[in-house]
Amino acid sequence: MSPLLHFLFILFAVAAVVNTSATTDPSNGSDEDFGLDTLSRRFLPEQSRVLATATCDKYPQLCRVKSSPGPDCCKKACTNIKTDRLNCGMCGHKCRVYEICCKGYCVNPMFDKRNCNGCNIKCKKGGYCIYGMCDYA
Image 1 (cartoon, rainbow, N blue to C red):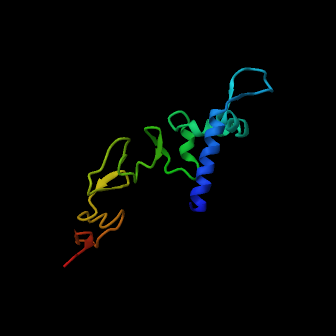
Image 2 (cartoon, helix red, strand yellow):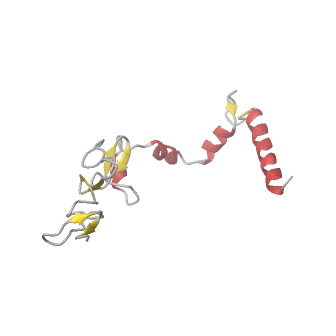
Image 3 (cartoon, rainbow, N blue to C red):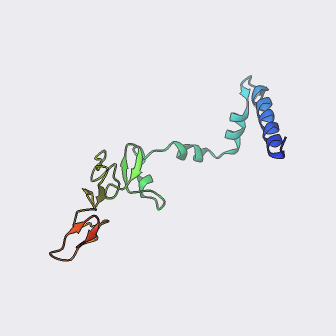
């Protein structure tokens, strides 16, 4: 048996023993189960549990933090409705498979001369966009 498999076997065995052997917490005198769940809650700060369950529908300011995917809240998730293909322009408005979301509008980057091969890539005046390239052929 390899050392890694041996270690995993011991780890699972210890976890099973700890999980099945429930003891009571002597500090509060109750007969309540005192298992891994209680131990993990004891060492985690109370605030981290609140933030883990917080969603932007209840706390819209969550979408405005620096690490957020976007400033808008759609279906309890932060998003940017100016660039998100699943919420383009407004929550729930999906772009087609071949379209991308540019400034809140679904566009086809293969043939749109204002968004040729990507958002805000404009072809020259009088030019055209074919297969994502300006003035192809």
